[in-house]
Length: 339
Image 1 (cartoon, rainbow, N blue to C red):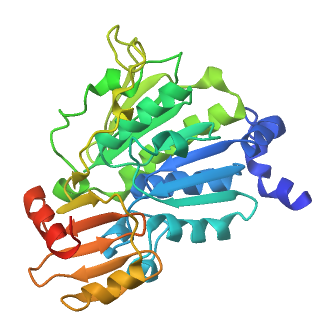
Image 2 (image 1 turned 180 degrees about the vertical axis):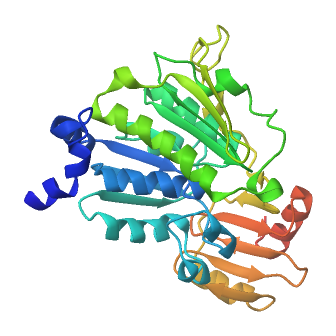
């Protein structure tokens, strides 16, 4: 107990948190979706603050280009192609062994979004696309769970805390998310400090909520540009009267469709979801007849003669890397995996 008390002493000395707030933080169960640049900073803050349970979800694996801004990873993680959720859990466990960590290697879809929110008090957005954000938004508002949105690209970032029954939802702010202008970290780049700043603002609102200091919640959409420094802090609008999420209760993102293929924006990658799991060992034997194959316990990579790469995950997902053409990706998938 003395060890734990000393660990959080500087945080509990901060009067708005105090010992009572720290106990509330310790009892909190937080979900971070996306363990990239934002997610790694968010997860580090949550673990160091002493949350009771942290569930981390990511569909991707560590690559060398991630290390410039994704703070929990190192060159060994990239060399081993470790799934980000697995690599992050290993680092976080060394930071605070008192926190219960629940790593999940998965794509968030309409089929599993609500189950990922099971027994969760707060959801933090570490994602890189509006499709997943709207999915989380709808799941959170359906279940009455606060959702702290954050996004960063280039030298710009935005964040807002969205609370069911108290604020508008993300759909009220951005609509369907189709008007985002197409900028991603992979097309216009990103500098690491803006990621840290936005994630830290998200973490501050999370601490307020968990500690019970809800009267201090900012209630604004904060937008920053840090290279030339511009800041805009705008009060959140009222929910739109026709919003299908926070007004009509339709939660459109939660309705699964038949589309199992999607482009990972700016990644030169197409993801295809299979209805069957993959036994990586047997697929290694099968694919090595025609491809150069490498495998670890979490994924299998096959370098195709055509120049693209297939990445197979045990849950049935396949990344076709080297193209954003869904027809080309489907053709390669059918050729090597089958329909």
